[in-house]
Each structure stands twice: as C-alpha cells, then as structure tokens.
Amino acid sequence: MAILLLEQALNGLQFGLMLFLLAAGLTLVFGIMDMVNLAHGSLYMVGAYLVATLNLATGSFWLALVLGVAATATLGMLLETTVLRRLYQRDHVTQVLATFGILLMCNEAVRMIWGAQPLMLNPPVALAGPVELFDGFTYPAYRLLIIGVGLAAAALLYFLVVHTRLGMQVRAGASNREMALAMGTDVQRLFTLVFGVGAALCALAGGLLGPLLAVQVGMGESILILAFVVIVIGGIGSVRGALLGALLVGTVDTAGRTLIPMVFETMVGPEAAANAGPAVASILIYVLMATVLFFKPRGLFPAHG
Amino acid sequence: MVDLHHPLHLRWSVPTLALLVLLPWLAGHFGAGFYVGLASRILIFALAATSLNFILGFGGLVSFGHAAFIGVGAYTVGILMQHGVSSLWIAWPLAMLAAGVFAILIGSVSLRTQGVYFIMITLAFAQMLYYLAVSIKAYGGDDGLALAGRSTAGWGIDLGDDWHFYYVCLALLVTTLLLLARVLNARFGMALQAIRENEVRMAAIGFPVLRYKLVAFTLAGALAGLAGALLANQSSFVSPSLMQWSQSGMLMVMVILGGFGHLYGGVAGAVLFLLLEEVLGHYTVNWQFGLGAVLLAVVLLAPRGLMNRMRKGVHG
Image (cartoon, rainbow over all chains, first blue to last red; front, side, top):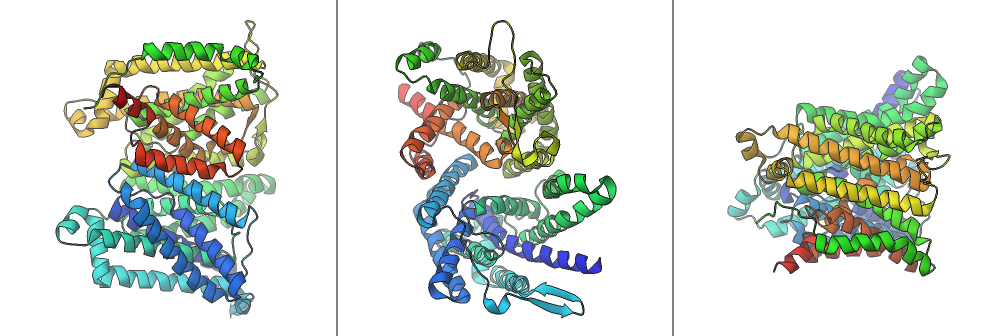
C-alpha cells in the first residue's frame, strides 16, 4: 500500500510538472496580454510532432528535443507577430473565436502533413527500463527523468521571472499593464518573447510526454482544458499559482484515477467500481476547481492587485 | 450607441419564413429531398445558438458550457424512451425542465464569478456532466444510447417523417424567436442589456442583478434542452459527445459568426456554420482547415458578426 501511494505520488508529481510547463506559458499570456489563447494546446501538439519527426531523422532523442523546442518557439513568435498581436485589444469572445480558428487550422495542417495515424516516439534506450530507487521499489527511469527536467524548467522559470530584469517587466505587466507601459517597458518585444517562451515550454512538455502518451491530432485539446483549470485555480497571471495549481491538479487527477476505483470497489463491488470509478475521478478536478472558485473567485494567488 | 430595441425585421424575415415553409417542396422539386434532413439539423442548431445568444449577446454572459444543457435535454428524451415513455408531450417539456433545473444549479454557483472565471467555471460544470454521462453505463456510457425511434406526437403528426419533423423544428424555432423578441423588448430585456453594459450601476440603482442573470441563464438552458430533445430525435441517438467542450465552442462560434446581440444572430450563425461545413466537407476531407481560416477572417474583417455588419451597412 505504501509503495502504491509512493508510486502514485511520483506519477502525480510528474504529470503536475508537465501541466505546469503548459500552464506557465498560458497564465503569462493570459495575465500580461489579457488574451484567451485556445491555440496554446496546438503548440504542444506541434511540438510533440516535431520532436517525434526529428527523433526519427536524427536518431537522437536529445537533439530532437532541443531542435523541436527551438523550432516551436520560433513558430510561436511568428504566430504572435503575424496574427495574435492584432487580437490583444479585442474582447475575450473574439479571442476565443480567432484562436479556435487557429486550433482547427493547426489540427488539420498536422493531419495533412503527418496523416491521421498516431506517431510513435520512443524514449532513449538508456532510459527505457526501470530503476530501483530503494529496496523493493522500482520506478520507470524515463518518468524520473521527466520529473527532473520538469523541476529544472520550473526552477529556471522561477529564476527568470523573479531574479531578472525581463522577469520584473513580465510581473509588472501582469499586475498592471498600463502602468508597465507608461514606465517605458517595450511591451511589444516583451509580448513576443513571452509568447516564444510559452511555446518553447509547450514543446518541451509535448516532447517529453510523447513517449508516454500517443502523439496524435487532438492531443492538445484535452490537456489544454486541464491547463486552463490549473491557471484558474492558481489565479490568472501568477506563475507561483500555476505551479501550485498544476501540482494540485496533477496529484488529484492521478490519485483519483487509482484510488477512487479502489475505494468504490470496497463500497459498491468491483463491477460498478470499474464502470463509475474513472469517470468520477475525471469529475474530481472540476469539483476541485468549482470549489476553489466558489470560495476564492479569483483563484488562489490573484496576480492583479 | 448600443441599440436596445430588437425588432422582428418583418420586411425580410417574413419572406425568409415563407421560403423556409416552401423549402421541402422546392427541395423535392429539384430532386434534393435529402437536404430536408440537413435543413432540420440547421434549424435545431439555430435554436440552440439562439438560446446561447440570449445570454451571451444580450446578457454578456460568456458561457462555455452551453452544450451541457443540450446534452441534458437529449438524455432526458433518450432515457425516457428507454423506459417506454415516447410521447412528445411528456418527454420534451421534461427535457426543458431538466435542462432548466441544471441551469439554475449551475448558474447559481457560476454567476457569482466574473469574466474569464465565469467562462472557465461554466466549462468545468459542462465537463462534469460530460463525464457523468460517460460513467452511466445503464444508459450507454461512452458508446451512447440508441433511441428506438422518434417521439410520438399524435394528432396526425408523424415525427418519423422528415417533412413533419422539419415543420415541427421550424415552428419551435419561430416560436422561440417570437418569445425572445417579446422578452428582449420588455422591461426584463432592457434590464438584462443594461446589466451587460454596466452591472455595477444597475446594482446601485436597486436591480437584483444576480436574479436577472439567473433567470436569463435558466431560460437559455431550458431552450437549449429543447434543442437537445430535437437533436436526439433527429439522429435517434444520444451520446456524451453532445456535451463535449468543442460543441460548446462550436455554438459560441455560431453566435459570434452570426452576430452576438442580434435577434437573428444565432440563426444566421448556425446556417452559415453548418452550410460551410457541408460545402467544404463536400470538396475536401480537410474542411476544418478552411473553417478555421474563415473564422480567423471573420474576426479580422467583420469584428461584430455578419448580422451586425449588415445592420451597420443598412443604416450607414
């Protein structure tokens, strides 16, 4: 039982960190530019496809990951300068419509280029097996690596946001955009940069999760909704809130998926548990979000003053 | 200047209606009887989009979970039919009632939040209902629920007949539009639009803002439930995919495409969206790419939707 709990805790941490990579970019775009971006999940999908393809072409997972992340960041900045920039001044409804359009176009473009079949992306051979963390407890090496990279990315982002001049401008923009503008921040350059960083984090998450989940069209949508839940729980515009929200959602989702069917099994028998368990687990994070919003309508760490 | 009055535009809506009444004959005459089914589908989505437009366009409530109410309505009809209740006169009002009750419950929690948080919490509730539908294996779960047939109406109306079904859909859409025009031009509609423009001021002069919004939200939910009941009949099938978030997104797209805050905005959007889907789907399997491009173009070129663009064109 203790082993199962530990394993679930690690799985939850791993999923939570990946959610954070997506949510961090989303919350900054949302908080600073006041922009609802439904196409954020598409960057995650495009990133995963690029990494998978480059992995086949170069034979090196790491090279593919670096190149894929760089390419997606470039693509993100290109998207920002050509289309999204025109949407900042518009209302949320319009932004939803436009980015929904971009999302559809991305999905179809990927389907046209790579076909409807899911792509295979294998983890590096050295990390394919499990490692024994201590006596009697083994854990897949690749998942450990994801946790490591996720933690490193979170730390780097923290340093970037809290200890650099650029990060200061980003925080200023999130808490009061007009004031940041008036104090002489080059907002246009800042927006493009933030968008590029967000896209890079998306691609990192996509590339890392690729070997665990299927690389397929539509993979961005399901995770996008989770990322939105994360940033709403954490408070829009707050990176700290995104981290906490992501870990919360990751843990609740993962634990719910294994523990709830077990609890149900003792209560209502195995058949009903197998039927209702997974769905109840999926509902859990939305209950969590509704509860948080009921008591704190602006999330746990509201960025705006 | 915001236009608060929403006339029926009888000068062109009556000829349009006449055309719609004649449509099955025209389609039959040109050997395109198949399109009566498509036309019914468009009318149903026009009803659903109109109900969303009522809260989104006139109430300023950007609900991202409207498909949930369609799903509740559809499932009510499906579940009742599984238990042998197929009468339209029982099932459809119950579908509206069930959707309305869910709307009251969801609305009384989510209407306390503002802006983006409202968008997200309505989405969260819709997702909950989606997963609930997936989990109930007795009513098909993930695979959905096939209906034995269409609802029975009596009085010589046979919903199994495509023509009859088309006229029922048309009658319900017209009734809904008349009802909403009446509501919007009444005191309630004025207050609702005023709340959209300045909620704090309305609260300050003593309007029970939350109650107004909740009533509008519930009415929209019930109408969406009716659309769901029709949709379940049209395809003789209900499944959780009716409640997927992309369905809510699609309804929102229809409203914005057609023109939010215009009485006929939802209708125009549904017609345009589904025809676009049909035409693009005819030429290429990658029709969604074209649809996405059109959406982007509309946003960049006709920011307030097509109906409002036309209105602007008429009045200078």
